[in-house]
Image (cartoon, rainbow, N blue to C red; front, side, top):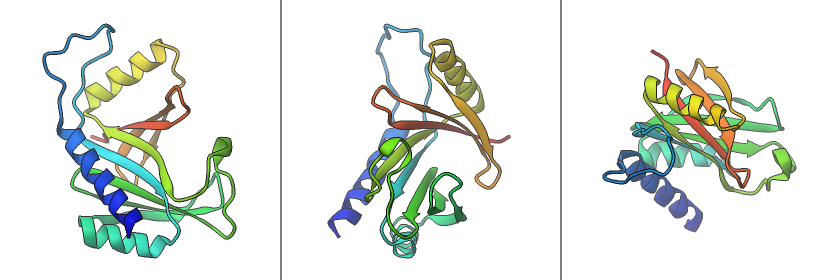
Amino acid sequence: MKTRFKYAYLASLLLMASGAVAQGRSSTTEAPAFTAKGAFVAIVVTDLDASVHWYESSLGLHVVKRGKSSLVPAETVVLGGHNLFVELIHHDGKQVPRIDNEASVPRLLKAGVILGQKEFEAVTTYLRKHGVETGIFEDKEMGVRSSLFRDNDGNLIQFLTPNE
């Protein structure tokens, strides 16, 4: 129950943050200004079906896609709604270390921000210019293009933009 509350609290924080806009602050960098249009979060869970049910019934999300991971022995479900995508990840059988020896216990796996097309291009260009390795891929089922990269601690950050 406490774990479920943490995830609900996290989701509500992400939703509030996605609507926030920095105002009146001068930047010491030339990073492009952007406004988030939604949020994305990925979480490792112990019971995939129970978690799907919780996110559907508690947050009103719906299943966008379900499948097996090509990287690790895990099944994933992406739920969406309200400008929020939640990816639930369940390891098949014995839990194994994640990519780069990340723990495979229930936890937040990566976070993302949904941007408009122009902002997505500007931020991706900026990151690449500043030496940040950025992979771009398209997800037809979710209807988005994604830019995936790691922060200085190795956390996965993902910017998404709707296909237009």
